[in-house]
Structures are given as C-alpha cells and as structure tokens.
Amino acid sequence: MATYRMDTRTEEIEYFSQDVMTNMFIVDEWIYFNVYDEETREASASYRMHSDGTDRTKLPYIIPAYNICDNLCYLDGYIYYFDWDNSNPDDERHVLYRRLISGEDQPVLEWEPEQGNKFSSICTDGQNLYIVSESADGARIYKQSGSESEILWTGDPLIDISYDGGYLWGRECLLEKDYDNLLRISVEGGEIKSTFIGDEYNNEYFNIAEGTVYIVH
Image 1 (spheres, one colour):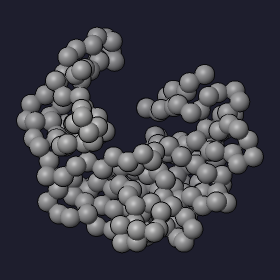
Image 2 (cartoon, helix red, strand yellow):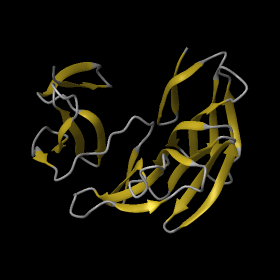
Image 3 (tube, rainbow, N blue to C red):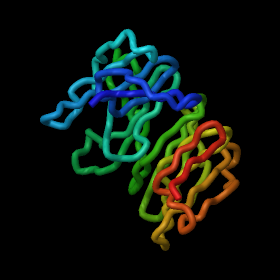
Image 4 (cartoon, rainbow, N blue to C red):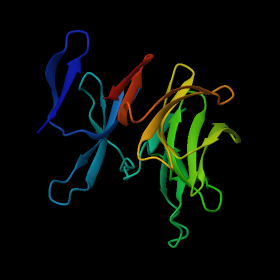
C-alpha cells in the first residue's frame, strides 16, 4: 500500500509517497498525516511533508484521531481537537483542546461543554471556529471568535459540519425519523437557507468544495 494523488483537471493518478498517509489534513503547502503500526493498528508517528513530496519531517506529537466525526481543524497556528475530559475519568464528555501545530507546547483545555452536553463536530471559515454541542434534546452550533462565543443555531443533532462560501453544511439527524437532512446554514444569523431531504438522498456521505455539494444518491 502507498499514497497516490490525482490531478482533478486531467484525472491522471500518480504515485506520491510510500507512506500510507492517514488522518490527513492540509495547511498551506504542507500535508500532515499519521502512519499506523500494522500490528497494533495504532498511530506510531505523525509527520508533515511538503505538497511536492519533499521535507518529510516527524512531528513531536501524534495527530489526534478519534472515532468521532470532524474531530480536528486548524486556525492561526493552532490545531483544535476533541478528546475526553482527562481530568475526570468518569465524565464521558468530549471537550475542546488546542495546541500549536508545531508541537512546541502542551495541549491546553480550550473549552468545556455545558453539563449534559458534549462536543461532536468542528470546522472553521479561516477566522472563526464553529462547534457543534449535542445533548439528549438536540444540538447547538457555537460561533467562537477569539474568546467570545455566540449560539448561531439550534435544532436536531447535527454532525459532519463543513464550511464553504458563507455557509455551514451538516447532517441533521432527525430524532423522529430514520434518515438525515442535509442543511445549509448561514454563518451570519444562522438561518437555514436550504434543506435536502434524507429519504430522497442518502446524506450519510457528502462533501462540499467551491460551491458544489457531492451527495451519495
């Protein structure tokens, strides 16, 4: 196994690296990724590599990768990610941590959800963080600008949020239905601008880039 890449203009696929690059995210011209031990199936090391395949450098920490959706994002030199509240082993809340992407510091507890809630998804528009907090009754999206936060939206549980062109896109898990809606929510005011119904589209798999949404149908 190895990592390959494709030019979307020509659809030509080429070999890129002998590394099996997992938990990958890209910042500017740098690719950050984990390498897994084949026997233990756990991340054994994390690296960054220039997008031209040069300057492969081992990081001083393991990139966080947990079995919850949209666990990590990058903003202004820091990675923000969810983890268990390590200060309380009996508390199953996901809390928000941050650390320098260079790894030259220790993780810092950035934000804890309210009692009975847990964080489930995070993304950024390059200036603000958008964080989904869930409870048994539904969900909220918080818009965090620096140290200030506001509730942008409330509704049924919402996962897999992504930002594109002034909107948040996410899967709304309807509590009374056996399917999901795909919502488009304005980051200015939180109004729902459009809804794709789950019984018409399988919204379990979707992505968005440059104004185009890709949905499994």
